[in-house]
Length: 225
Image 1 (tube, rainbow, N blue to C red):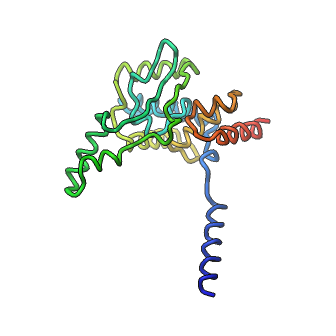
Image 2: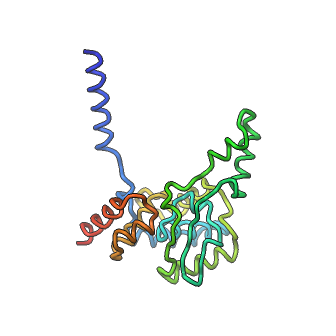
Image 3: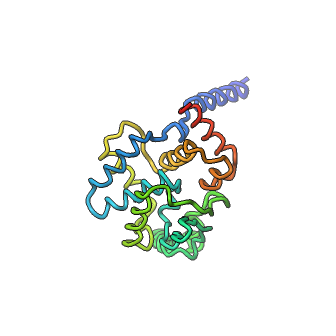
């Protein structure tokens, strides 16, 4: 009796959670909200203004994940073909990951350097290594040019990516949730509305499942139909 009651109670809790779970696509920014966010980036002090603008455009138009933005390198850009090519990330070859691992082992004597390296960022899926068009707008191209003129790679941590988005959203006074992954969802929605085919959308966003691309296209047609 007790076991059945506990199982029933657990199911009810899971069901209520499923009904209240908020999905990222529900936090997609409108065109106006995204413009206000970019406008707010310009009001931030240097060098946060350029960093915030880069983060917002990389997430909100190129669809990069927060971890990808934090590990961005200028050599990902192929200006001849107007593509950004993300690569399969190997933490042992990443200076940032090695420095972070070394810092972790300094504060934890029981943690080896190899163990710390293994906990560093890895691409979510094999599909994460992909080519993304960067000729979407002159604004995006100029931001990438200016950013890579100043930096060879993203100069700060994954936490800074979150912080730059939060600071820009607060400055924009946008009445909605704004965080790195909702910017990625905004990029997916933007491309879907532009009429990108499901297979191409899947490739650009680095999803392992075609159904995710089909969902965004279906939502886009419903929202703008």
